[in-house]
Length: 268
Image (cartoon, rainbow, N blue to C red; front, side, top):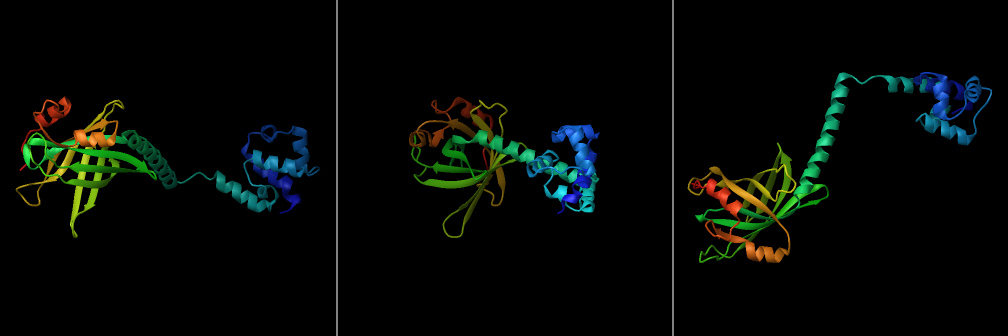
């Protein structure tokens, strides 16, 4: 670095402005003082030098470096991006914007839910399980508890299954992907696809789970599912609302009953 290069470098850096008067205004000095800097009759103090570098949005080194290096740096900044570079930048900006939007949408889904789906034991019954959607480290997860127990005289077991899933947005739908380890080396894979409500006040999410056929090994069939957002004491919600519901039960949520009545095809 050398102070003797200052005047030449300053003139090079001011070329991006329409006039020297505009450059003086940007720096915050009068035109007469700027002329003194440009003709080398005056050199700024360290404080003013830092102010000039800040105003021109360059490092202090750019004011004192060899003029040829400064000219090359300015030319590189002025060179317009190629078409490919522009397209890549646009794609990157779009990806960032989409990621922010998806994270906001997923955040709006966070909360406690009762998930209603059919049971393979009987088409007369729905299984209500507890689900919590939450975010951690900029990712969205789902924890669910599925209980099978006696209700209204129907014995469907008393086990509680725990599942953890990851939630993503794809094609405007909420996808819950589950990979649970069972006994031994067995793995339970699950996929739930939910349509996103356009109304933030809507407490319901509707969609389908992909279910293994009972009678035909290897066949996957869709089964309707409804998520109802709830609030309150989690243990009480789990105790009072989770488990098998007879679809004709008058205490069953009417909107849930209507959905499963409309989709009453028996899974085979």
